[in-house]
Image 1 (cartoon, rainbow, N blue to C red):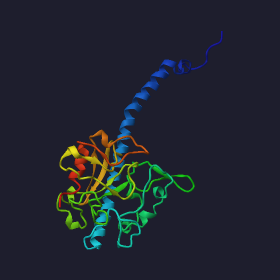
Image 2 (tube, rainbow, N blue to C red):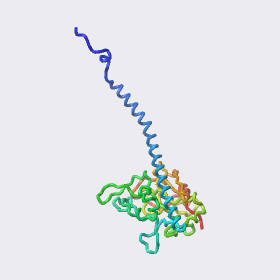
Image 3 (cartoon, rainbow, N blue to C red):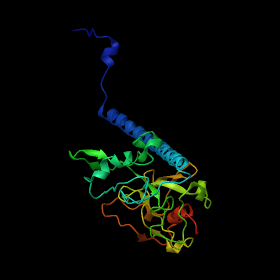
Image 4 (spheres, one colour):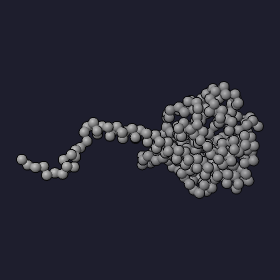
Length: 280
């Protein structure tokens, strides 16, 4: 009879049984389920911080521009190459979510030509929220991140300094000294606009009926990149993330999103109205 010369520990060693392996896999799945949401929240928070930093940098450039131009702020909108305007809009270009190949989606030429460009150190990254994952298709049909997610309130700079037909009774700020009511800390200048809403460089909040919420109307849609919340920056230089409450403010992304639609009693619109302008 042969003796088993293997040591005791070797004779007792064995692999996992199927039950044990399934238990290990289940434990790993449970741990992953616990950790992934936390990691997702951490990533979302980091992107929110970066977004706010971008807002503040661009707002600082906007403020520096006014300091060099006798307190005058850039227009929110002006026709491109208009010979009757010396400085034009803060940015030109028409983004088009329905046409990914549109050049303005991916070519930063208009950012480089912006009157604010030199005041932000020639940075291209500060013009958009890092959570905006929309893209354009360049001439080689390669996906390229879109160049901009930020728009400027029509009420800060206006359409060549006017309301552009959006409400002649309401004040358009054209100089830093005009921010008296609701005041610099209560008047937003820039915000992130949804990828399927953004087009030109300005964002319209209709003041129609204000403060009567029953008359609210959504002209352009704000972004909701941060867990149903969007970034805003204000005339005093601070930035914040606003969480949206009304589901109508955050409809599904669509290439056929309808703009300029009535939304009675949408308190998200009222929030933006309160931080836009006041009667003349």
